[in-house]
Image 1 (cartoon, rainbow, N blue to C red):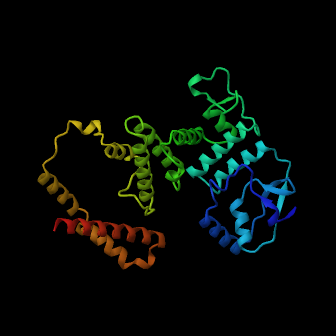
Image 2: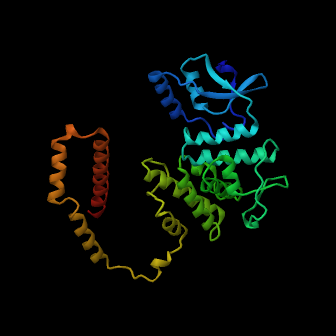
Amino acid sequence: MKVQLSELRPNPFRNLKRLPLDKERVKALKRSIDETSFWENLIGRKANGSVEIAYGHHRVQALKELGYDEVDIRIGNYTDTDMVKIMSHENMGEWQHNAEFEVEVVRATLEAAESGQIDLPPVPRDTAKDCLRSVAATDRYYTADSLAKFLGWKPYKVESALNFLDAETEETIDRDTIHGLKSTQAREVVRQVKRLSKIATKARAKAIGRTLAAGMKKASGDEHEGAPFEVTMKTAREVADRLVGKVPAALRDKRIPNINQFAKSLTSFLSKVFTTRNIEKLSAIVKHVEHLDAERKRELRKELEKIAKQATKFAEELA
């Protein structure tokens, strides 16, 4: 069915204010449509004189910006439950592993259950009480597993989103913190914030969470403002402990090493980085650079520039 773009409305459970369209994704789709034309596989339902699309919000925006007037949409008798489930599956394509999207889908699903628009599946009677969560303002319950089954997701993704919503309610984290993070990164940040909130003030835990998130973005190649250093999944706990002023147990009884001996050891290590053999390898690559893939060339150049920049900085400070 051909539908005017002006008549299309977003999925009612997709909150575009809380999670706006990604401008870069729209740009990429516009390029793709220009090069290969538009793949018309959108679906939706009629509602209040318009058509609500189930997914593909970025594609619709790309079509609008390219000057299209209409698009072909398969219309179905989709229920509210269908619309929520279809939206959750959008994560497999447009929002794969995006923490912010996962949080907003879980939030929207719980809000729809609270308002009575959808019914979540009942939990087994033998479910442990400490796993039960109540749907606000109702006498119904759900668990991370039952919600994951409803959405068609892995349980850990739902558990991570629920932990974020708990921390948000406790005012120890906010959505800006996880903006741009992958779901695994956000899960680790939330885990550390939750742990720190027990030994520090909420404000302190929240600030450290922002620093951890910024450091993870920097480690992923995003020069994020407010990121004094890189943070990885493996170093998040140690960094969090240092920022809160807690000395890790593994370091409590260790004596401070002799700084001169330490400097000597480090100098020896650094001297092995650019050995004659490694320099020969780099020279060979430069000599035959025309055979080097653009991506490999970019990676190697970026790493060398990074090393040079850091080395120059430390050398100047030691002068």
